[in-house]
Structures are given as structure tokens and as C-alpha cells.
Length: 286
Image (tube, rainbow, N blue to C red; front, side, top):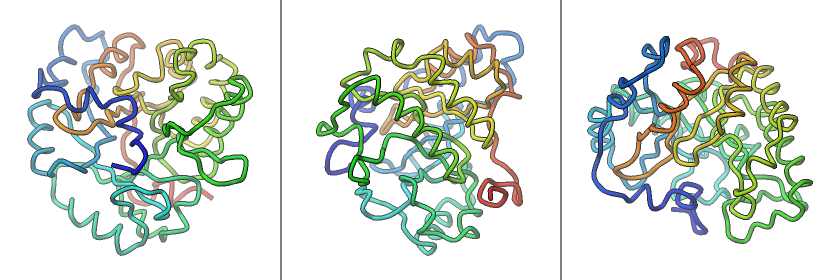
């Protein structure tokens, strides 16, 4: 785990260390689905290996009926994770470790400068790239991890205006497939979510997702985005992915995602699927 507190441990420590595997998410999704939702494949594109062997993850995947997309942190070493892929050689070795396994191969790109570590050719060997807006630019230009206890929000309204714009900057700057943890808020203001994530602010995120062809993650650990925002995004034509971002035996639990399938009326055409070779963001983005 990172030296401070991991972004997953911050809000999901209890969930990640809870008891044994429960009912498979695939079975949960099959019960009472709305018309048109039954054809959605359950894929958790936000699965980290640290602390769990690949063999154990594959066992959990089979029992839950959820296909996994494995991600490793990627970017400059200053991002301070136990494993951060920071070169073509490290990226290719990671990809090779997953070759032939029934998983998607991805990375969680860290901050806006991660592409300076890799060639386009190496990144194109991945099935997808996800990133998020949880590491933000501080007043002095240095990166700030917002899940750290040391992070200060300051004025909530001013912060939210900057934060919504940073969501846009991440999608505009980085050749990514998925924006993960979308609309997550720091602990100091998380109880103000419904007030602070106004339609105007979220509309900026929606417009950027459509403009840059980025799928928005429905996250089953943080339970975001919430239903009103998801309905806005669905109506606008955004595509979605599912992600647990959970460690340990509860990885792949997509209960919230399944709930949103039914509540929003999602169908297969609303869902992200990895782009084929030649059409990945790293290959087509200018």
C-alpha cells in the first residue's frame, strides 16, 4: 500500500477485508434485470493484483461470474506505490505476465505526465488504460493525493469548480479509455456530494467524456457516480464501465453497478469494450 493511505484503503478498507466470497455478482445481476439489461457482460475493469495472487483472482472471477481487467499503476516513480510501472521494459514485462490468462490487460495511469514514461507502441499492447482525477495539481504545481489525510479542500465551491475542470483536463490531456472513480469526493466534503456535484459541473464531465471518447466508471466501492448524474450521462450518450477498485476477497463485487444497470436502464450498447488494435486512444488521439 502507498506510504500515506491508498485511494482504495481510504474508503474501502472494511469492505476489502470483509468475509469470504458471497453470492457471485453474475448471479445477482441475473435476478430481476430490467428488459434490455440481461445482455450486459459483467466486467470489473478496476482490479489490482497487489496482495492477491493472480491464481486467486482468477478463482474469484470464476466464482463471481465476473471477468476481470487487471490494472497496475503506471507513471513516474514519484507517484509512490509499491509497484509503479515506469518504462517500456516494465510495462512489457507486466503485459507478458498476463498473457494467455482470461483477463483484460490494463494500467491505471498516474497523473497527467504518465505518457512521458512510455512509447505509444508499448501502451498500444494493452487492452485499455484508465486514469482518474484523484491526484490533483496543487497551488505550487506539485501533485496532491486527495485521499491523504493531509489534503485540505479549502472553500468547497471554489474547489469543486477546479475539480470539475480537472476531470476535463484529465480526459483532454491523457489518451485514456476509462475515467475511474468519477465524481469521488475527499472525505471532508463527501457528505455534501448531492449539493456540490451540480448538473452544471457534471455536464462539463459529460461533455468531455463524449468529446474524447472516454467511458465513465461506475464504481462499486465508492458508490459513484450517483443515480441523478448517471441518468444525465446515459441520456447524453456516455458509455460506462464497471469497477470495484477493491483489494482482497471482495474484489469484483459489482452490486452497485448491477443496481445502476436496472435503475438507469443500461444496455450493452451503453457499455465500454476495449478498442481493437489500430483504434485505441493512444493510436488515434492527436
